[in-house]
Length: 474
Image (cartoon, rainbow, N blue to C red; front, top):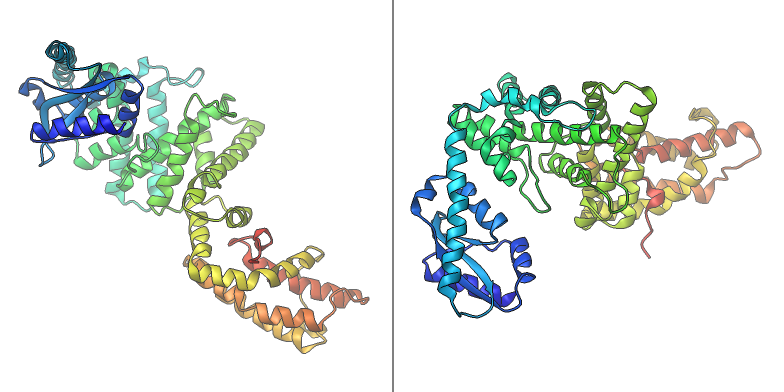
C-alpha cells in the first residue's frame, strides 16, 4: 500500500500536480497487483471541456486510474495507473491504457452532447418508463410523492415561500438525470449530472445544488447536504425509499440489506443532526405512508414501530452516538427516555457527556435511582401538601416544584445541561428525605402521598434520560 502511494505521488509531482488517492481505489488496486509499478498516461485536452466528474468517473470507477490535479485544483490531462509487473514494455502498457480511456471519454463526450439537446425538465415524463419497485409504480410516481413530502419537510423546518418553491422544483427534477445517456452509462454520476444539466437548462443554482445534495451521503464519511432545500429533499427521498421497501416486507436482517436501507436511515440521522433539524420521525413516516397509499391499519402500525426502532438503532452504540464517544449506559439512558426527534436525542446525549452534564448526572443519579425504585409503586400522582408530617417532606416538595419550573423552562430552550443541574440540586433534599422519612408507612393516605411525591420527582427526568440506566461512578 505504501509503495503504491509513493509511486503514484512521485509521478504526479513529475507532472506538476498532485494525485487524488481515494482510499477505496487504493485498496482495490492493492489487491489487483502483486508487483506494482505505477505509470503515467495522458489524454486529449479537449476532454477537459467535460464536467470534471464526467472525466474522473470513467478513470476512477471503470479503469482504476488515479486522476491528477494542478496546484490550483484543476484536473490535468494526465492519469496514473498501476500495472502488475516491472517496467518491461511499459510504453505498450501506457498506450493500451490511453486507448481504453480515450474510448471511454469519447463515449462520455457523445452522451454529454446528446443530453444537452433537451432541457432537464423535459425528461421528467420519461421517468414513467422506469419501474421504481415492484407494486409501487414508476419513478415518475415516486417523484410525485417526493415533491409533496419534501415540501412538507421544508415547511416544518421553516422555509419561506421562495425556499419551498426551490424544494418543489428540485424534487420534481431530482430523478430526471436517470434517463440521460450519461447517467445510463455512468450510474455513479446520478445527481452530479442532474446538477450540471439543471444549470445548463436555466434552473437556479439553489435548485441545482438541491438536486445534487439529495443523494448525499452516498457512502460512509461522505459530505452531507449543506442547504435547507437539499436537506429537505434528501430526507424525503430516503424516507420514501425506506417506507415503501418496508411496506413490501423487505426489512434488513443480519447482514442482508440489498436496498441499502441502513445506510439511508443513517444518512437521515446524520442530516438531521448536522442540520440541527428538530423533526418528529413518526409524523414524517405517517406522511410518507399516506403518500404511498398504504392505508391498512395493521401494516401502518407495524411499519411505524419498525421504522422508529430502525432509526433508534442508527443512533445506538455502534452507530452515531457510539461513534461520537458517548458511553454505552448513557446511550441506553437517553434512548430509554424516549423521543422520536433524532436531533433532540443527540442534544440530550451530548449535554450529559459534557463536563458540566456529567458532574450534574453523577451527583443526581444515586438519589434518583432510590426515588425511581419507589416511584413505580405510586398508584396516582396526586400530592396533598396538608398530609406532609415532616419538614423534610415539605422542603423536598417545595424544591420539586421549583425544579419542575426550571426544568420545563430550560428544556423548552434545549438547555439540557441547565436542566440536569436543576435536577441535580434535588440530591440533598432527596437524601435528607430518605434519611428522615419512612415512605411505606401503615397509613394508606400518608404512604400514597409520599409515593406520589417521589413519582413527581422521578418524572422530572422524563424526556432527558432514564437515570436508572446509568451505571453509577465507582
